[in-house]
Image 1 (cartoon, rainbow, N blue to C red):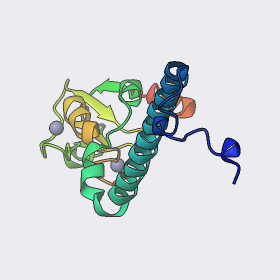
Image 2: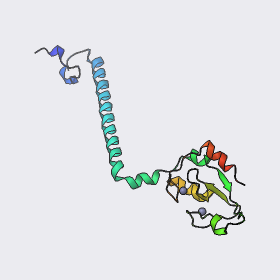
Image 3: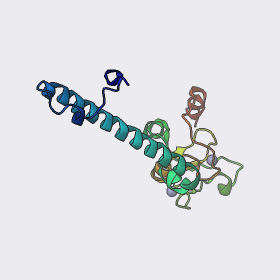
Image 4: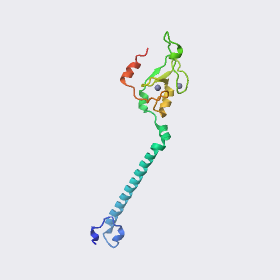
Length: 159
Ligand SMILES: [Zn+2]
Ligand SMILES: [Zn+2]
């Protein structure tokens, strides 16, 4: 058996009498610390991924609670001052917009937000609160996305 080809990680006990030990002992302890840190890191990563995987199928509710839309996206949604102007020939019920968040009608002059994809309108305040914890339209559940340039152009066509 050739002990010199053995592993360098041999504990300090293997050479207790060596006078030049201090240097190699430091090296060994540093290596041991590094190894320990590494092992802890792997342990932590394993735990982290485990927790992540577990959260997927089981913690659906917890995950849903946290998924709101991007604040940046929220800011990019246009705010319109609602005008309940009733065009001739149509009844008031046809044009009135009910906010699905607070279940009351949008009043003349109130700030409203119309979602880009489905065109549903809500109080700006109400939909802001809603979108802080949801990423879908409160009415039709369409995912809220950034408005396109084409949609922006169509909103400016409002009378
Ligand atoms: Zn409302
Ligand atoms: Zn909608």
